[in-house]
Amino acid sequence: MARRPLPRILSSGSAQIARSREIARTAADSATDVLQPLITVSRGLRKLAATARAKWAATPKERRGPTLLLVAACVLVVALVPYGPLLALVTLMGAAAWKGRERPVVKTGPDDAEIARLKGLYEALVPYFSVPEDPSPLFAHGGDWSGSFGEYAFDDDGRLTRLKIAYPPYFTDGEPVARARIEQLLHAKSGRGREYHFDWDEEGNRLVMSVLPALPTTIAAQRFVTVPGETVLGFTDEDAVQRTVPVVAADGTEDAPAVVWRTGPRSSEPHLLAVGQPGSGTTSLLRSIALQALPHGDVLIVEGGGTGEYACLTGRDGVLAVECGLSGALASLEWAAHETERRLIAANRARQAGHPAPEDTRRPLWILLDRPGVLGHLAAADGRPDPQELLQVPLRHGRAAQVTVVVAEQFDSADTLSETVRTHTRARIVLGPATPEQIESVLGSAPHTTPTPQVPPGRGYARLGTGPVLRLQVPATPDPYDDATNESHRQAVLALLPERRAAVDALAVDTLAVDTLAVDTVSVETVKVETMAVETMAVGTVPAPDPAPRLAPDPGPAPRHAPVAAEG
Image 1: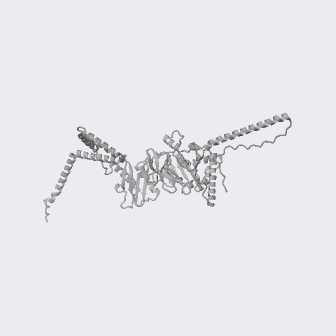
Image 2: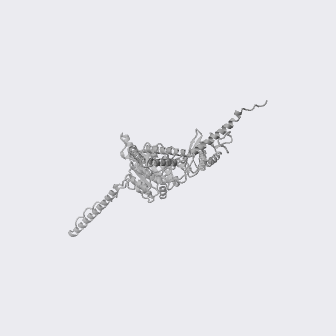
Image 3: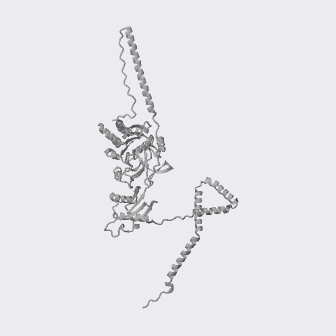
């Protein structure tokens, strides 16, 4: 049976439609070319109107009246000037043409370089996210990367700043070793020298990698808005904590997310341990803690390094002592142990009698011990006890006695820390460059970011008890007596230092007066003896006078931190 030909209208309709579309497209392009100046001027007028509207909205209400008066005066002057309206119109059109000359280019997808980077990263993940038994693998050599990478973003240099990966359900995302392999691979392929954050969603089988911005280093030591018993250790990311404190930075006043450490009887982390590399900022951290503790408590500082980093605190109100030598350190820590026992006994007796705790037992006492490993080595060489042994009582019973211990040590001497210090310091900080293994050994948990090899002083990680690992930037608290200190930071620290104790000068004056009185007494006794000898030679035999009572030797000024004997 012969096929009948199709009607002419059906056979030639598609060609006519295609020809009509081509004619319409050509006409649209021609109209666009002809009307391009008008389109440019219209776009510029729209931008100028938006700018004027934004400036008007930003103008305070009390200044809008004078602004309207000034604009009206300008319009009147332009209208009265010859050819003024024409010149104003030409100027407006020129400004609009200049403002709308460039149309923003909307990027709809990655370019060739970014596609090549995504393909390379996809191929690198294939051995980790695929198994031979999978019938339809999500990751396969030569596969489509768009099905695995949901979201991605690049910076101006073409490096990844954010990537969302969908991985198969059989991947062992609950094992830290498997996670570490993926994080290390993404870190290496996306570009080193930056800090990446990895957010694992085990329920949805999703991994989000993002580049973290650098924490600000412009916040110096200052009076933070906290209550007694709270200490600002440093500042972290905005989404990591729920509390912000107002601070004064180089750019002005702002609200910064702070890592707040709570101490006292109701604290679950009453003591702190900070470990870092030399020059990482552990000493600055202890200075910052001391300056925040002095308005509400007393501070005892023991420096094992002997570099004089705490000389600015010597003799200040609230500073009991700043010890750098072994003998002074042992005496001070022994007194701290007795003071802790005394506080416990006094508070217990007051509770048994139904009275509140005495005032001297409620004032916080801070013991800051910097580099105890050096003092332990000197004590072992001299046959004396390790100073860390004297910290057992303050560490075990310090929370009830309002005694807080802060220990700072370096990584090369971290093995010298005693078991008591490691057990009772539940608040931990790691400062300076460190490997993930070192960070995990101190904090007890690995961070969710990739540490960078070069960090500024005071940068590290913090973990309070069993909480999450947080990035940390310690407020700049340098030694104000150091010549290399920034002048603004120096003045900030000097403004926080308490006044020097007047008792120190009065004690020196009293000692000098006692010495003068003793000398005068000896001179008077000598004159009396000589006078009696002369009278004996002149008169004859005279009964010998009674011997003068011996004066007890002057014990000298009382020590500022004499040990207090424990009761009971």
